[in-house]
Length: 239
Image 1 (cartoon, rainbow, N blue to C red):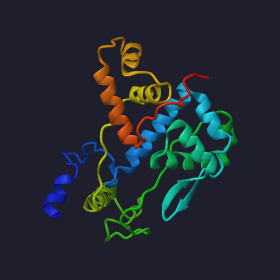
Image 2 (image 1 turned 90 degrees about the horizontal axis):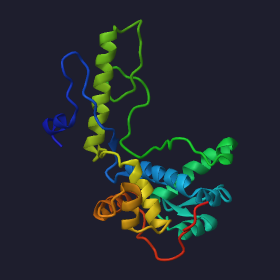
Image 3 (image 1 turned 135 degrees about the vertical axis):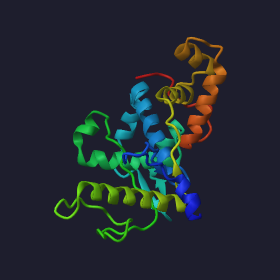
Image 4 (image 1 turned 90 degrees about the vertical axis):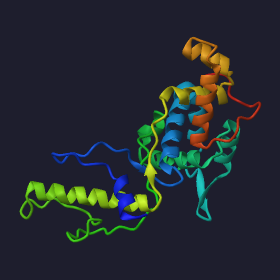
């Protein structure tokens, strides 16, 4: 990528020094989008069918293991994923993070709660110590050395340098977030076995909008990475 083309990817900074808001960047594979979508999906599962999360709580310690750099579900979690048709990398990541949170905070386990999924991803290597000559290095506020304008100029250069570094490595702006109700629709379709017409009638008060529902469910399912819907074995009852 040339410097000119890279410059076009950076958010413009209007007069006055304040830059326009820009979307966070994601990995080339859309890793963070998938994990955020899996998190929202599982929160919809907890809201509509809490017993699915109760089942997970029974064996939440160490649900996955690493094998050749990829997560692999252990026996109990593997059965859980098969039962609820959730075999995908994003759900594995959700389980690993929630399991770690539950190990350290018992109150989350008791309430079937979990906090924000704080995730890291592999990217370019950056300096970890401040170096005023390198905009990729961390920027600290040093009022005894810099004026406020000097600090914000360095901070802007630092942000632009790291943004550009990620773009050069294939990172891209995240897409618009999926509407929360679409995760509910996926749960209703996959786990409660509701048809597109039923969801359209119950959620949109219009059973003629089945195509809208079908499209939203398809796109949301694809974003999470869930396998195709299976026949039979779904937890129809709510409890």
